[in-house]
Length: 121
Figure 1 (tube, one colour):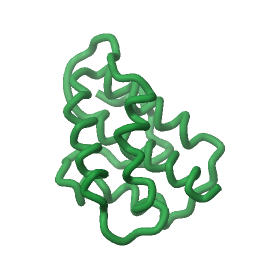
Figure 2 (cartoon, helix red, strand yellow):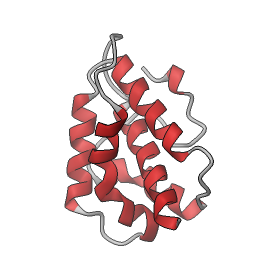
Figure 3 (cartoon, helix red, strand yellow):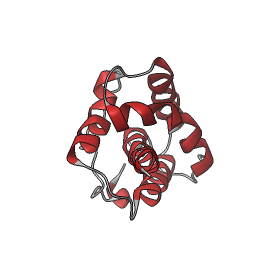
């Protein structure tokens, strides 16, 4: 149960990461892709410690794939859907929110379950 919660929280965080970039278009990124890229981050978001290299690689890849506003909004929605109804702690949320910085990805918004995906540009 805890790893399911952490996975969903990790997915949300990464959706937020991807949500920062270019113009409007039809989303090409699917929820399955988001999950695959972010799965290596679950253990870190659940337990802390050292961020796995595969996690940062997935975050950077997902970030680079989100070329359009529609892509970023799609990733955001996938992540929010993944974490909906899943309990998480402030500890997990803090770890997830810190991942972009730890992986060298700069995003211009706060990673939070309350992020409005429609406002993601």
